Image (cartoon, rainbow, N blue to C red; front, side, top):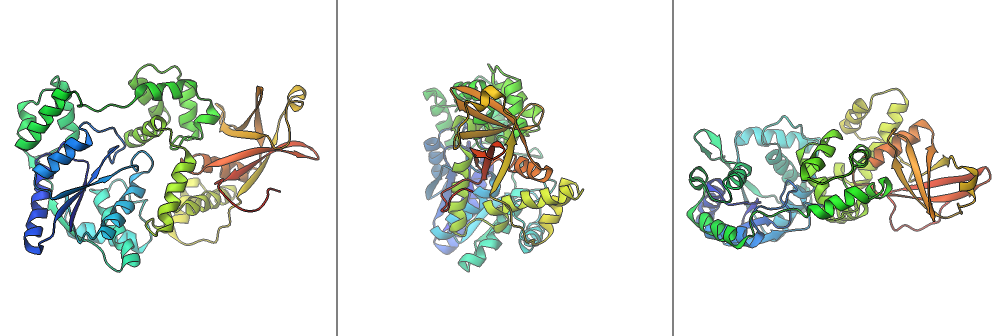
Length: 436
């Protein structure tokens, strides 16, 4: 099988060139050309402009033999995780040859990919590298060789350009929207005729452009508490506080502005919005990653336990006076014996009338208040909020867990001799044993 992984939103001449290359290989090998087509959300976590069935038809009309849907991933996982999953899926399906496009030499891609693979780095590939995602594909392909004893052969062709510029799906979509959902001549010249006819049909049907459910996103951003927002994947403390501070949200540009103020770039903003829209919980992401880790598809540096170990290692180094950036570099540079605690206990600051409402074993929720203080929320009729008292290293560790985007945590009130405290469980999941 010859495999191509894509959004194809819509299929343009650059995509058609990929399929043509696949057909060339198929003519020699007798294999079929199979498109692994992202279905529900794009690889960059956005809703699709063109619906899946129409994009599937475009791919088949452009010369593909078969289309396999890839779904359920891109509103739950970053590219660092979806790439290994898609490659493993292809290898297990029997894909031998993989076709992609890049504007740098294959030799450079291979050299960089093998360098990262030899160091066990698959998620921390520098942003400044051209075609960073293609390098990641190569590196993960090398990693999975250890599991399968085989890997896909990569065929990299130059990215197609028109008038010296790369064909951009984003610009195609934008031009059609700006042109009142008519396909302007400059866009038509970079689309296959079959794509144009299918696209015009979908526009007439009203299925283009696809849109987010902004009403659900706004409702959740306007009404969920800080603690409840913290349970949604890809929302860190800064994002949650920016959401709360900038309520109320009426328009999409207000949502984007809130994430921008929290330091989120476009890709992470789209993933966060998709996660809010689909109500993706941290525990759901954790379970998905662990499922694929157990299958041997996820590189060790991206495992859930490694994320937790990194947080503890960094908190230890920060306590020694080392910057968090340097501590992260130290962790990435070699193997370290790290034994992070799975539970953290914190003191509470309760008023006398609040103490009467609190009971041993009550559920609590953790969040970071607007001043950046780790805090606890307890509900027993009334909502009780309290800052938490933690040793500095534990506070750093817990904040890194919160800001991991994917590690879940839970908390319960505990009665101790000196009063009520809160016991926080990191990566709370089904485990045997009792709490202290």
